[in-house]
Amino acid sequence: MARAWFLPLSTLLAAGCAAAVARPATPAAPAATSPAAAAAASTVRSHTAWADSVLATLSVRQKAAQMVWVWTLGDYTATDAPQYAAIEKQVTELELGGIIVSVGGPMDIATKVNALQRASKLPLLVSADLETGAAFRARGGWFLPNAIELGGATSFPYQMGIGATRDPKLAYEMGRVTAEEGRAMGIHMAFAPVLDVNNNPKNPVISARSFGEDAKLVSEMGIALVKGIQEHGMLATGKHFPGHGDTEQNSHLELSRVNVPRARLDSVELKPFQAAIDAGVRGMMTFHGDLPALDSTKTAATLSRPVMTDLLRNEMRFGGLLVTDALDMNGVLGSLSMSEATLRAVEAGNDVILMPSDAKVSIQAMVDAVASGRLREARIDESVRKLLAAKHEFGLHTNRFVDIEGVRSKVGTVANQAPAREAAAKAITLVCDSLALVPFKLPRQAKVVSITVSSRVDLSAGRGFDAELRSAYPNLLSLTLTPEVVAEATAGAAAGNTGGYQITPDPAILPASVENALAIARGADLVLVSSYIGATSNTASMVPTKGIPELLNGLRTANTKVVLVSFNNPYLQLGLPLTEAHLLAWSPWTASQRAAARALLGRAPITGKLPITLPGIAAFGGGLVR
Image 1 (cartoon, one colour):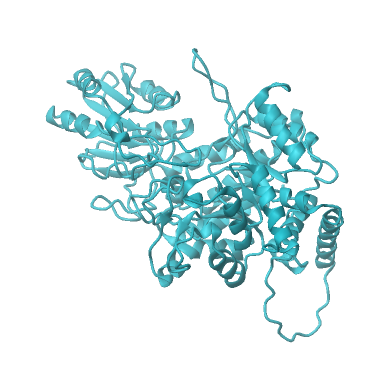
Image 2: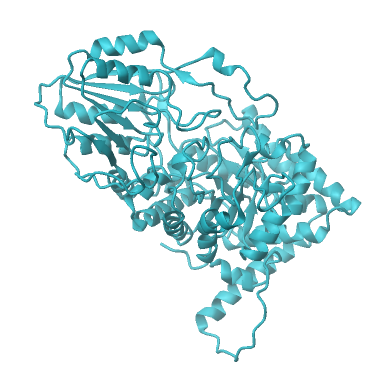
């Protein structure tokens, strides 16, 4: 249910948010004020009045602390656990304004958020990366060694899978479910949708996180997701402004670069962001990348006033909350100190300093800058006023806690799982099928082999997929190939600050494993090779795991029919030997695994359309219907 107090961005701008840019005045006849408009204006005045009353009581240090948000796991911790004590100490002693909560079970997240809210002097704004729904962060995990799945929130496919459905209603439903489940856990701000146009297959960071390579498609789906989130009581955040899609560098490790003319930016990268702004998106997250067409100083967009104030605030008329991407990433830090990066981010126009490597240092930098005259206290006030108004808008001034008993009635419910399963099914895309293998027509006793390629820690890989297949082929042979680290791949790896981001060397399936798989598959009527490997942190997303080409070539030499299924990397087939059939499932979650198997077995139609181009293989909009 939409919340009546959750007002559109235009209303808040009219109330006089300090960072908003007034449009040129035009003469107009006096208009009668409707009761609804009068009520909305009164509500906004209430938010602003409370914000101003609190702002007047804060010192410069306390104001600066409101702009600093730190990261915490959403895991279970005892009240006296050192890791919990550390985050609670930051909240209480530094008087932080908010947090970004990461992975944990739904109940654990809600419990921890309540505890931190109780410890905080002022209510906290709580954020989280919820790109595929609340389960992007709120999954229960697995109990070992029994491999029992512990449940969690609702998982939708990656955004590119939603793009493959071409159904904005599903994007809206994804937003609705995300907001209702996230709010039940105490989260107020979703760092979603991803509005980047992924028009570079070599992008190692965005890939399937984007709705696709077409600006119109990304805009349409982005608007629907924003509305779904915000009409159900949560702030949506478009990211990563002004566009992270056309880059081959990993912004966690180095300064990314989008080197295209301004006209191209206007026609592609900026379109989804402008569409979201026009639709009332309340938040925006920045891109740690260099865009020479917007700023010639080789400055990360996050720290660029020409990008964040001149373009985003003034030209594109965004007056909402501007949040830095994680400020501990090497793409923005480079050789800068945390103090200097913080100040440049504030000077650029950011309202939230997200995940600084040292929150105390960031706060002190702002305090010292005000004292020295580098920053005006009024500049700090602009951001803090908006943050406090948002807290009042959420009603946190009267109740900052969530009902722990109510979590189970709202998170991961059967009703919420239904649109997620529908999205998983409609997303399935059959790229090619040269021998018309799909749907499978093999007899029940056929020899079918399912080879799963996944990381060692991915316990869910292949479980739902093989279970569905086994219901049709009881003699199904299942095996898993786990890529190992290739030692030589670490040579020349980026040194220095990586923002806490794990550098993952190129994975490779060992020759012995490939030989074993080929021996098991010998004489099979059909072999399915399913990859759950995504883009690695230091290689382009189109580079396949080493060992898969050798496996596919070996199967071809044996005249074995092969179906390649990608659950994680939509560009997997690029650089691989062609197979008889190739299916994209757009997500490694259980719902997508079962949807892929059902589609292959002919138990569900296949209607997905490619939201990207696979160069030399298939065009945008391609996809066989079954």
